Every structure is written in C-alpha cells, then in structure tokens.
Length: 381
Image (cartoon, rainbow, N blue to C red):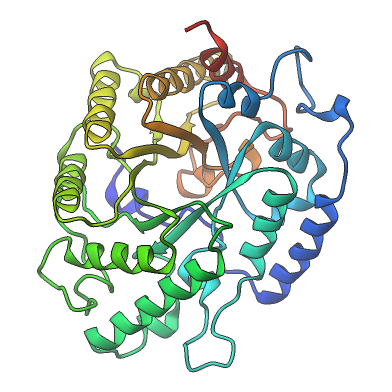
C-alpha cells in the first residue's frame, strides 16, 4: 500500500502550547452551553431533513459513530454543529498523545498538561458523546525530554508506568476505551525499533511483545473498567502485519493479558475496493471476533486524487462497503473517521497530491460518502 516512511509519519499538527490549550478550553465550555435549535441538527446541506443523523442510525444498529477531533476546530460553529449532532463518540486527535499531555519531566512541578484533553472530554460530556483515548504508548510524538534524555531501561519503565497510571487515573470513568499501544509492528510483522522496545526499551528488548504485555497490565491496573485496545494501520486485510497482530492477540488471550479489542485504522484509497481485498478484510475481522475481541474501525478515511464526481462516487462505495462489513460482525462496535471535514484532514499535508478523504467537504457540505454510510446503516436487515 503506502510506503512505510510516509505512512508512518504523525497524523497530527505540531505540539501546541499550554496557552493555546487553555484558550480552547474556554471555547469548549462556551460551546457546551449552546442549545442547538432543532432545524440546525444536520449539517448545512442536510438534504432530507427527515433522515436520521449518523449517530441515531448507528445506535439503532448497536454502533458508535466517532470522529477524531482537535480543540482548535471547536471555534467553528459548523464544525461544532456537525460534531455534536452527527457523532456519538470523539477521540482526541493529538491532545492525549504523550508529548502533549506529558510535556515535561516528572521532576517538574507540573509535568502533565491535561487542559486540551479535558476540554474535549467536557465537550463530549455536554453533548452526550463517549470518549475514546488515544494513545498511551507510541513511537511518535514522544517528548524531547525522553528522546534526548539518557535513561536506563528500568528508569524508562518507571516513566512509562507513571505516565500510564497518571493519565488513565485522571480519565477514569470519563474515557471508556483506550488505544494502549499504537503501531508497534512493521509491515512485515516484525517488531518496530522504538524508544519503548529496544532504544533502550523498558526492559524487554528482544522479547517481542512482552513490553506491550506490560503496558496492557499497567493500563488495566490503573483503570480496570476501561476497554483496552491495540491499534494499527495497513492491517485491514490478512497480511504479515495483521498476522503478527493476530498472533499477539492469541498469545495475550492465552496468558490473561487484558487486551479487549483491536483497532483497525482503515486509512485507505480507492484500491481498497477490490473483491479480494474486501473479502480478506472480512476474514480478518472474523478471526479477531472469533477470539472474543471487540473491533473498532478507528481512523477511517478514503484519500482521492481529485474531487470529481466519479472519484466521490467511488469513495462513497468504499465507505458503504466498510460500514456493511462492520455490520456483519456483532464484535464490530465503532466506526470512527479521522476527522470530520476535508479542510481539516491530515491527508494533504502528508500526501500533497491527494485529499478529499472525509464525509463533509471543505465547506461542511455532505458528500456522497455520507449518504452511502447512512444508507448502509438504515437499509433493511
């Protein structure tokens, strides 16, 4: 699919200062108390006003519909209207990642900065939305005080343990599910070399997934009620990476590691719409479901080369196919897009010739993909 060095880049914006985060905290509280009139419950191009919003249609099928969100977008009325009426879940795009939420060393009087993530949690609670946490352990967006520091594996283990415990305890009862670990495997199924694994690692260098097991055990101890997930990209069909994730899941289930679900990111392009690929995607979900694991589609978007009618129609078909595939498995509980509208997507910054990936366009108008997803959710069973 996409080259590793490009696809593995952070899907984020630069780390924001605490001042910016506090500013947006104020914006969120202001937005939280705005009562939306019923005639504004849909996006600006609502089309059929009698049609249900995505969140209602999904709820009727036992699903949550989510979106990745950044606080800076909460100052846009159209964004707020769509997010609060169409989605039943949000996930911080960046504000719960290590570098933003734990920007200073533990020796600092205030090592953590919860302001940005707190703002999003407050928005979600004010609009009857669930919050999904992302992420506790990742090889990207690690603060410089760690990457430029000199730590023994034991010291690094203490840092990560404290991080997991502090963050999860802060959001206990507020965040129902966490991506405990994000993107720990290479495309060929081998372990990725990271500061947490073997550079220098937390004491399990060369021991495969043992360091991931430790992270899951720490997370469960910090919040026993939270659902704990492993999350990765380019593992939608059966391939070496998804095989490695499956092998890890089998091993974790055998040894009582508190892994409760798999996050399938689903950053895809139009090549995903092939019978063999879609069949493999379904087989992959089935084998995880058969292990008793919950499945979340966590970062769905479909990148295009242009915004032509033909491209948008092809994109819509993929959104519909992925939604239908999820609905085939009771274990699939979440479909979440990585953003809300095309103007805020990460795609153009990383793929200069690609874009148009989401359900709303840059002017917050619904695209054919929205109709395709809604149709899949509402068609007779």
